Length: 124
Image (cartoon, rainbow, N blue to C red; front, side, top):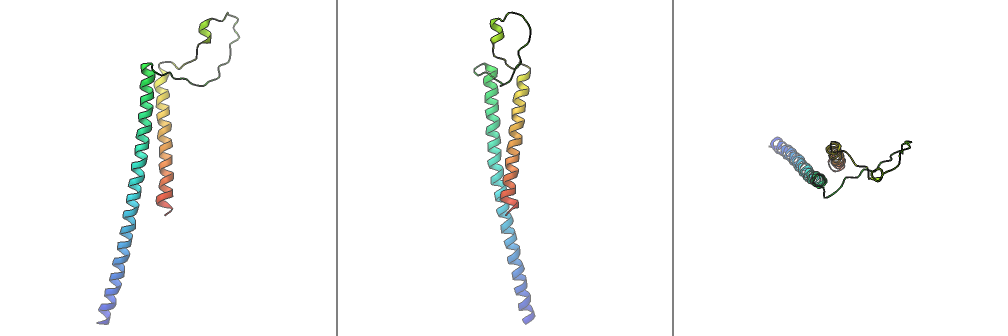
């Protein structure tokens, strides 16, 4: 009789340990799910903002300006009014610019996600 009672307590202890592991894993799964939802929403919003800006530039309601240093040529021609115009990206280069912005946002958000994952899940 003592043997069965001891075995019962041992199995009960194992069941409680397993239940604790299941509970801890379910908490981690929920934390990862929350983290994923948060960062997916941030990434979606950032991409929507880039698309909105791209559409505004394409429609002409906004202009795309790139800060750059342009060296003055040594040509001895007379300056015209067109020489003073603001330098802009060519039509062909604009999609590349927006694609680069999107890639930068993707990388930034992925890095933030991984940092949060390490902080929330791994270090727990």
